Amino acid sequence: MDTTLLIDSTTVMPKEFIEEYGVTVIPVPIHADGKEYRDGVDITPEEFYSILETSKGRPSTAVPGLGEFLSFYNGLLEKHSKIVYPTPSSRLTGVFNAAVQSARQVEGAQVVVIDPHEEFFEEGLHAVHSSDPRLEDRLVEIGRLTDPIIAVMNTDFASGGAGLIAIEALKAIHEGRTIDEVVGKMIEAKRKTGIYLILNTFEYVVDRVGELQAFLGTLLKIKPVLTLRDGYLEDVAKVRGERKARRKMIELVRERVGDKRIDVYVLHSLVREKAEDFLEQIKGELNVGNSYIDDIGSSVGRYTGRGGLAIVYISREEGEER
Image (cartoon, rainbow, N blue to C red):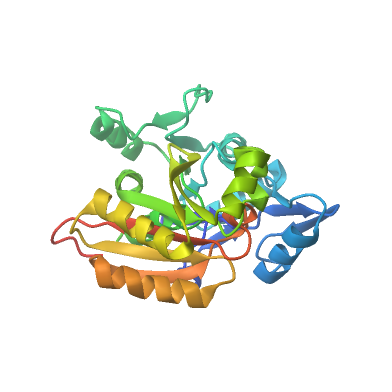
């Protein structure tokens, strides 16, 4: 196939898709206790959360180096003429910027950037914005570019949110869609995707909410419901107890999608039984098509801690087959 999908390990995607379609995954570095690990390669989720709970400093994900990006790009372009790479939110990590700047170093490559934020330097790049009233014209221009092409998308999500967008890109690629159609499908998927999550502890977000709020939240057994909006992590509700928090997440999804069919990705941090129970609850209350369960991943798990739970969804139009 002319086009191939590239993701990094912060994007959570069902393993069956990765294995069946041969998706290439860049392992993101994790720094903890003075050591560097490669996410998904030489550190397991259990080991990650153990370090999170015992380390003096919180483990952090880093950005792969320029040479690593170039190695992946050049390797893929030996077999394909086009690469699409949906990245996690550029508000949360520097992966998007690094991926774009590395793509610019690929000899002869036309670099398409999808939804860069306002401060992003765009000279010499082919920028596409989801909100552009002339989006269709911009996509036509992308379709006329000469190979090789590297299209890097700022999904404004992370973990399974970026994963659902990646699935849509993968399906479009294997339907034989052109590069402009694949980019269009990614943008459409981004508009229809949402995520809500709850923390099991305030311990790892003290620097974001303040020590007093974290103390009171723990004391009162408050479960903040968080979302990603325009790439930023925001709290949208505070409820007491996990049962009410799950209920609130389902209500928030229903407010967004109504009776539309949705594909659902339930994510967890080492509480699979809870995730399975939550998925059954979701299926009983919402119009669910495809569904998946997975670990939430290091990029979000470092904030939720062990016991975190999330629902990611993508809505479907009537008659849409996916």
